[in-house]
Length: 552
Image (cartoon, rainbow, N blue to C red; front, side, top):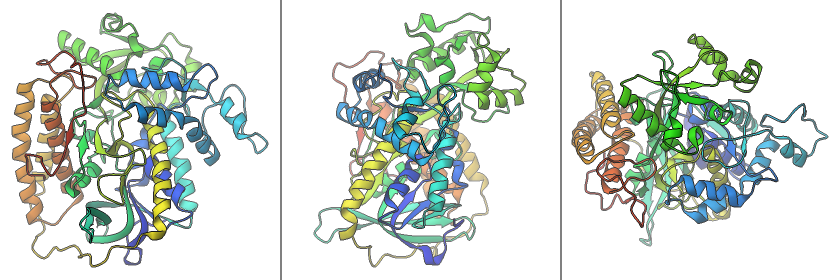
């Protein structure tokens, strides 16, 4: 494993920007026929995958069906899911889980089943324990206790580290993609990326026949989020600057239950807790979800988050409470050990105490427009995972569909790349990064101040409940920040913090533009000025060639 980019590593067959579930899956599926580099902005476990608690939705039980999973997804997506994509991804769910089991992911099983070499894959699949989450009509969530993402990530990382054709490049981040016009004028092709090496401070050119963006979402645009610090919309911003369309950026999912504690940074309380009977309560102990939806605590996330937001504003309280104290203590410690131990660090014993929770920005349902194989508008550029917009999630992502999407689309991208790689050459005559006209900044405090202003602006004006006045106010402030950041970028050497701010300002601009265009309330986008649903909803698609703002 390599910890930094060095000069003899600057040409690969496939460059994957992002080291989460999507990126590592693509690396493993392509490494037998290609030389692959996987870029990680920090430690390899800094992506959202590592912190995912819930699980992976898949049709494995004989009482369940593909049709039921599709119907649940379409219902949660409130009329905007692309049905063909939903059917494709759900139909591949069992094969996806089979592949993960083959890789050795230690999923939680029923009873005392023990994995050994004599057990078949089919026996392993039938032994998996299934839980239920909001929006699902069946128990179809496979998991590894309450740390599924960690289990998946660590398994795939070990596999990738052991593969001779995979280079894992930590502590570096892509600055921008490199594209070239085709000789016949038929469009652009991606031929690599400029990459900032944190150790040396240099920006290197990495050439690659194919480039894949797997950088996750953009929830760090908001003041309160469940996401790790690296979720700064890098892939979306880079693809947009390169000329790719983005869609449905107004649909930002706010997870209903993030631990409320001054020292509990970004700690998510998994939806699976509510799947096992946890109830949401006001400070006085009364439940409120039955007044908002017949599915109560298991309603889709947009409904639960708005209900909590409504009650907090109505009562002026800082949080609501999640109560699962009616369950046996042994059940909770066995099934939710991560949550139990983490809450204990803050003096909360979930076996006897209610858990204080608030909504927090969690998932970017929109993104760069791609096909079911992850292909973008630019040849040889792919986007997979939360960076992309496939049409699966519609106006509201259903719980545990996101990891499933990562794997299925990565599989499709691998097949598409394999069909093209033999006839693809590296780009030529690519200019090196030029720093001859910039200087080192002596005023980094401007970056931190602008970062804080951006996140507070997005939280206050482009949050769970919106209106036209708030959106226009946010638009004006983001425009000022965009100009300041662009001026700073042009004059100074790039740094990690500045690049993330640059990307977040651009993605925030896209979120606001999409939100202003949608004149209805649907799923995750709720506006007081247009509370009703439109009869014929459409995706909100933005095209950089016609966008009425100067992109950062």
